[in-house]
Image (tube, rainbow, N blue to C red; front, side, top):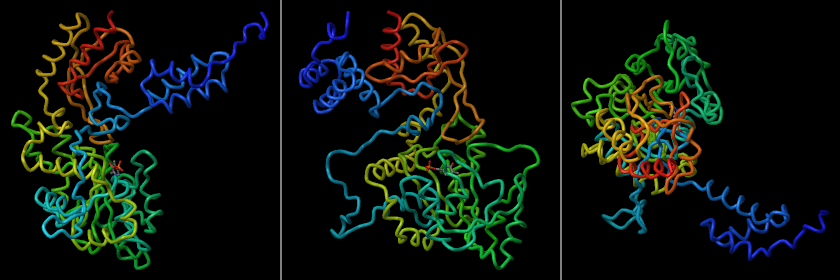
Length: 436
Ligand SMILES: *Cc1c(COP(=O)(O)O)cnc(C)c1O
C-alpha cells in the first residue's frame, strides 16, 4: 500500500482538542496548542501524538507528591514540606495596623527570631545564597574578606564561595590550609594592611565532612579579632539543644547536638549569621540573616534588597514556623521535625498495617538521611514497606499523588519516616492497584 492510499485527512484541531479533554485535565487552550503541534508535526498519528504531548505537559506540572525515598529534606522534592496557611485575603505584609501607615515586612519575624536566638535583628531574603550575596555586597564590597581554605567550598547548584564573593565585589583572602586553619592565620592576614580585611567569613561545610588531621578556628577565638565575624550556617538549626525534641530523643543524636546552630553562634560572638529557611528550620524556601542591628540595617538599605525580598507566600509560613518553635509545638506542626521524632515502633506498626491491608510485601529496617546537604553521613533508623521488583515507575504514576520510592537490592522500598501518616491510605491504594 502506498502512502496515498493510507493517508487520511488529519482531524481538525478543535475535534482533536475536544477528544483530548476526555483524557487529560488541562485548559482547553493548552489542548488546542497540543493538537495544533501534533497535526503539523505528525499528521499520520496526530491523535496519539497530541495525547502524548498533553500528558507530558500534565506530568511536568509541579504538584504534590509522596516522598517515600527516606531522604527527609529532598532537594528535588522541595526540601522541607510545610502546609501553606495563606488564604485569599490581602495580607498586612508591609502595613502597620497600629497607625495605618506603611510598615516593614521584617518587624514581626525579627521580633520572633530575637526571642528564639538572641539576635538583635533579622532580615529575610529569597534563599540563603541570596543572604550570603547580600551580606557580602552590603558589608564588604571593595574590601577583603578572610575565608579559611577548607571552607572555600561549593554548596551545590553552582553556589561556590569564591564566585559569590566575586559577584558581591568583595575580595577573597584565603587563609590557612585545606585541612587546618587556626585563629593565628586569620590574625596574620588581618595584620597585612593591603588585605584591607573588613570581615571574617566562616562557612559551614554542610555537605561533606573531613576527618583526620583537621583543625579550624572557633567562633569564640575569632570574635576577639577586629573585623565583622559573619557565619554562613547553611542548615539553620535554631538551637543545638533542640529543646523542642521529646525526652525519648535524649541524649540527642549527634547530627543535632554537633550541628553549629544559630543561637550558639550568636552566643559565641558571631556578628551576623545566614541560614536557609527550608533545611533544618523546617520552613519555606527563604534565607535568613540575623545578628547585630547596625549590620542588618545596612543590608536592609542595600539596593540589592529590593531584588531579593521575599513575598508573603514565604513570610507567612516562616512566621508560623517560628511561632511553633515558641509554642513548643514543633514536633506536631513542623513536618520535618515530626518525621525526625517519629518513633521506630510507630513506623513499624504503620508498615505492618499497610502490608496487612494490601496482602503482600514485607517490613524491613531502613536508614533515612536528613538530606539537603545537612548532616552528611548521619543516618536515622527507619522502617520500610518492601515489595519485590522495581515498581518505582508504577508508583510515580500513582493517583492522586505520585509516590517516589527507592529501589535497592532488586526491591522497591517505601520508607515511612519521610511519609506523613495521613498518606498511608494513598500508599495502600497504590499498592493494591499494583497487585491487581
Ligand atoms: C544550603 C547552603 C547554602 C545555600 O542555601 P540556599 O537556601 O539553598 O540558597 C549556602 N551555604 C551553605 C553553607 C549551605 O549549607
